Length: 167
Ligand SMILES: [Zn+2]
Ligand SMILES: [Zn+2]
Image (tube, rainbow, N blue to C red; front, top):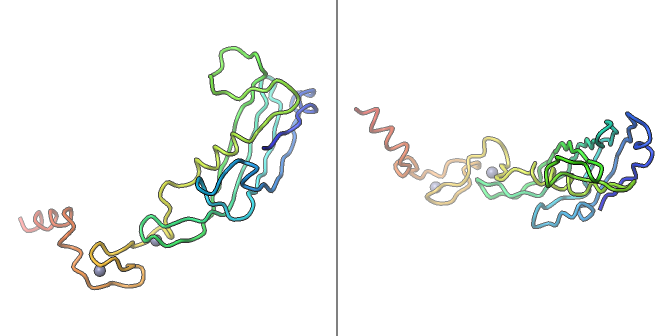
């Protein structure tokens, strides 16, 4: 849990507090089944007083243990996230139900950081942008060379295209 004391910046308009942390995944309540973070999460940013709200701006980065969605190889990639979130004083009217609110000199920034980082993680990670994946016939890793299987005839889209060219 990451709590920031904002007593100082609340007193001054345009007050700003720089933030720079190395965080363990557990401090952001990220468990390995959600995202397999390797080492610490780096975070840099600030909280500033914009008059009506406190504005959190943060850049996060960490290494993540991933499995390639095409060739199933395991690799380590970098997750980079940017978070911009407003915190409203308690009692503010006309704000969304899920808006972040504070009612003391301490604000808890765990949830926006956690969400930002999890959202930035790709649904399907690739070991490299042009990963060739596995052969649908024999399962060989096509990045390591062609296995020699006839892959064209089993791809219905390519088969249709072939037909089209013939006509
Ligand atoms: Zn791959
Ligand atoms: Zn093959």
